Amino acid sequence: MESLYRTHQYLLEHLDVPLRRKLTDDIAWNERLICIKGPRGVGKTCFLLQYAKENFSPDDRRCLYINLNNFYFTVKTIRDFANEFQMKGGKVLLIDQIFKYSTWAEELAFCYDNYPDLRIVFSGSSVLDLDDENYHLKGKVITYNLRGFSFREFLELQTKCKFNAFSLREILELHTEIAGEITSRIKPLAYLENYLIYGYYPFHLEKRNFLENLLKTMNMMLEVDVMSINQTGQSYLPKIRKLLYLLSLSTPASPNVSQLSADIETSRATVMNYMKYLKDARLVNLLYPPNEVFPKKPAHLYMHNPNILYATRQTNVNEQIVWETFFYSQVHKDHKVNAGSRNCQFLVNGQYSFSVGDRIRGKFNPDCYYAISGIEAGERKVIPLWLFGFLY
Image 1 (tube, rainbow, N blue to C red):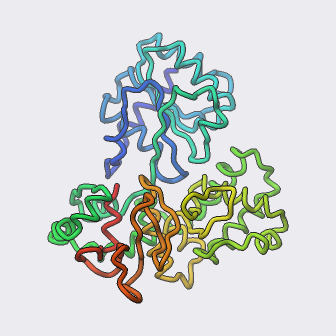
Image 2: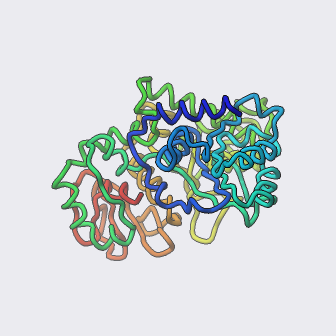
Image 3: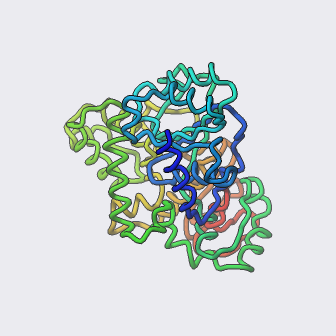
């Protein structure tokens, strides 16, 4: 255990996180069992360490970060380690890479039931299904989702300015005033293209080739998060990799499941399951009409965020698709997004219709909001597209 304390202290002393994530203030940290879910590459490890650094000094032994990649946990159980930790005065145990430990759900439930003075915060892949697969934790764990940077967060990094996040209702009703205040300080459109290409993932801050890093991360999502957690044989990996690429070429059209099943030489049902896996891994988004869900075929399929769209297609990336992907990726965090109708691509919360593009096409629809690219400010139901990047 002493070596783990030393590692914890070293990590906190050398932690350099340039941005405090908004999710930090949304979490009820006093809960006894908390899961931070998120796709690979969005900064879950740094998020855990940043919490520790904000609330405990590096040498305060009441808090400890452990990574289950450590071979020590091939012989030491979580329940025994947690017992030893709390017996020595430990209060908060931060556990990273939880899926590396096969019986993690049962043992976390045991800790919850038997160590009432211990708080555990653990990180997990977005693919983990805590409700269906891990019944041991039902009613015990509080789950939060960490996502990649919003456009607002990216702007804070680039400009060193602080900006508030706004609710959807605030943006719909007060967008002129909000946009006016922001554009009086910066020119958001000067940063939007870079965000669309590389701004969603925190590792764009590293001094490495972003595209190569993202492709590596995406392959790890497929090889580990999709194939391993779903207990799918590695021999099927080439099929799901090919499927992701073919889907990126056709986005946002409704996927032709019959053609895709022929292209990757598998059944229609397997194609649908693979698309669900890709969605859970936060590689794609499935857009359904109202009142329809999986396993029905989606009305449209989008890449999860514009960075993935650029990484998979690389050339001939249509701007209209990028704008729609950006809107979907920013809005769906806290809102239900369905396929729209009457020239409006999206229906949000079953109430608000949105048309996304560079201008109003055809006759103005008074029942629709227009998210328009290339404008700094709008009026009435015409809203600058970039402003939807301030929802979190």
